[in-house]
Image (cartoon, rainbow, N blue to C red):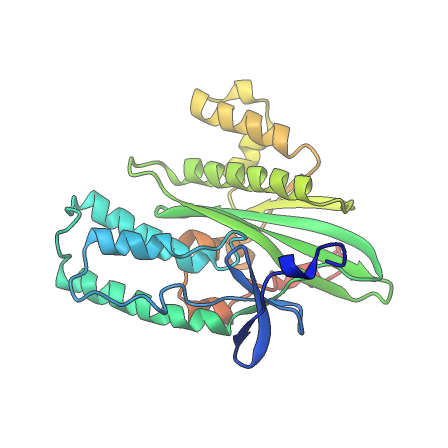
Length: 285
C-alpha cells in the first residue's frame, strides 16, 4: 500500500461507526482485520409478485468469491432449480407455499451482517501449517471446503476456514456415490487453486470424505472402473498427488453443511467457520 499513490487508494466506508473497505464484494475491517458480510439484498425492494425472474436476480446478487457463506447461498440455488424442474415460466408468479418459503429465506439474509471472519489465517510464529479439505454430497447438492490448520511455537493450534465451493446436483438423477465422487473432484480443483494462490509451504495436506466407496475408487487404478468413474478418478489422483485421502465420520464433516445448505443462524451455531474439533488435537488422535 505504501507504494501506491494515495489518490488511488480505495475510499473507506463507514459502517456501524467503523472504517471499512470493500474488496471483491466483501467488507474488510482494517481495525480488527476481519472480513464482514453484508446483505446484498438490503437495498433491493422485495416484489409482491415473486417470479422465477425476480428470484434469479436475487440469487445472482449473492456474491461470495471465497465461498465462506456458501451453505446459505446454495439454498437459493437449489430453490431456483426446483422452479426449473417444475417448468415454472419466467414471469409466472410462483405458488403460495413456495412464495412463503422464499420470503422466509430472503428475510434471514440480513443476519449475514453478524458474521465476521478473521482475514489472516496463519500465525506470526507458526512451526507447522497444514491444509485440510473436506467433501460431501447430498441428492440436492455437493460441495467442499478447505481449512488451514496452524501450530505455533507455544503449541497452540488454530483452524480457520479458507475457502469453499458448491454445486447443485444435476437434474438428471445420479447415485449418491457418484455425487460424492463429483464432490471429491470439486475439492481437488479447489485445492489446486489454493496451492497456486499461496507462497506458503504446507507441511501436510489431508483430504477427507465420508464416502468409503469414493476412497475405494481413488485407491485403485482408473482403468478398473467404468468411464464415468475412471475419468474423474484419474483427474482427482492427478490434482491431489500431494495430498492424503482419509475417511471422516459424517457428523464431523463440515462439507455436509454446504451440501445440504444452511440458514444463517444455523450456520453461525455450527462448526463451519472453526472446523471439526478433532483438528485441534494432536495428529495421533
